[in-house]
Image (cartoon, rainbow, N blue to C red):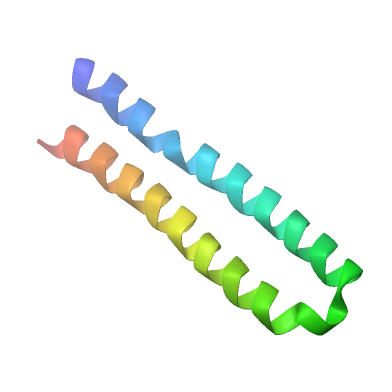
Length: 70
């Protein structure tokens, strides 16, 4: 029972990652709108940040699965 609660809490990392990726994308679009010539630099940084945020969400999901299985 307690493992299921812990797994549910671990999966909530996906919510944080989703909010973070959404905010990062919004700021990147705003930055490109203000300075179009910096598009390639902004895109590189956005993709790196989104990959790190998504990796955090995947780690939380895996921990949730491990708590349920074990």
